[in-house]
Length: 331
Image (cartoon, rainbow, N blue to C red; front, side, top):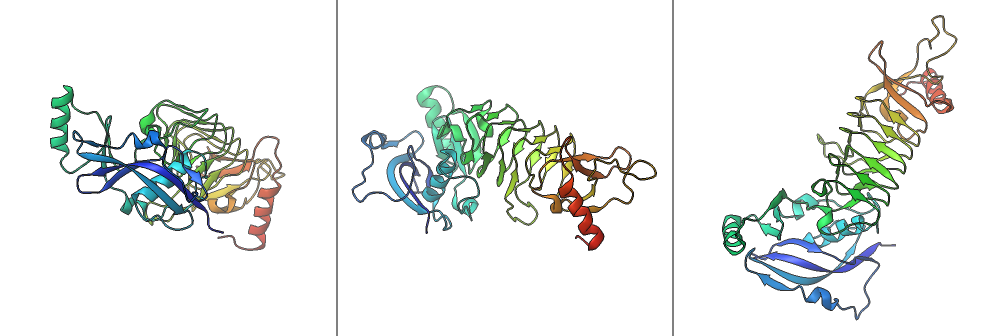
C-alpha cells in the first residue's frame, strides 16, 4: 500500500520562477479531502516581497513517500514530515534531492536567490539601514526556521538542518550537529555529529567531537546506521557501523566497517598461560554490527581494536562469532 502525505504550504518563488523553499505549517499523512482549502491565515501571507525580489504563494502538495521526490515542494514536504515526527528517518525516498533543491542565500528575512543577491542586499540595506544577516548559503535551511518540536533543547539552531528528527527529551549542545534524515528516537544527549542516515536510541550519549557516519562519501552509498538504546560514544570517537543496545565506544576510537576487531568474549580473562585468551578471533567490524552489550576499546598493548562484553553482560553472542571463526572463515 502506498504511503502518501500532503499539506498546504507557503512557497517562496524567485523572479525567474524557481522555488526556493516551502513552509508547511501542518503537514499530514494520508490524502486530502476533495474540498480541502488552505487556511485563511496562510492565504494572508501571500504577497510580493520587493526587497528580496521574491513572491510568496500558497501551494498544495500531495506526495507518495515510496516514490522519489519530483520537485522542491515535494522535497520540503518530506523534510517537514521528518522534523514534525510524522515519519522516522530512512522511511521515505530522498533520492536525488541535492539535484532538485536550489542553492539559496538563507537570511533573517527569508530565502533569497543567489542570482542578483548583491542588488537585494543593497535594497535591504537602503530600506532597513542595516544589511541582511546571512545565516548560510546552501541547499538546506535550519530546522527551527520551519519546525520547533516539543520537548527539545537546541543550543545552536544553525547546526540542526530541516529534516532532522528529534524525539522529546533530546538535547543538542552548542557544538553538536544533526543532519536531515537523521536524529533521535528517545531522550538523547548530542554533543557530536549525527549525520544523515543515522538514528540514535533512547538514553544514549553522543560525546563531543564524535562523528557518526550514515553514508559512504567515496561511493555515495547510503547506509542505515542505527545506534541502540543506552549507548555511550566517547569524546572524539567515530562510528560507521550499527550498534545494538547498551554498547560503548572508547574515547578517540573510530570504528569503520572494514576495521579488524579482536573478539574477547570473556572480557580478556581466560584460562590461557598468561591469563588472557590465546589466539583470539579477529573479524571485520561489520560482523559485530547490531549486537547488544559490546564495549569497543583500543588495546594499550597492541593498538588493535578489542570487542568485549559490557560489565555484567554475557559474552555469548561474541563467543558465537569466535566459534564461527574456528569453524569457517568470516570475511
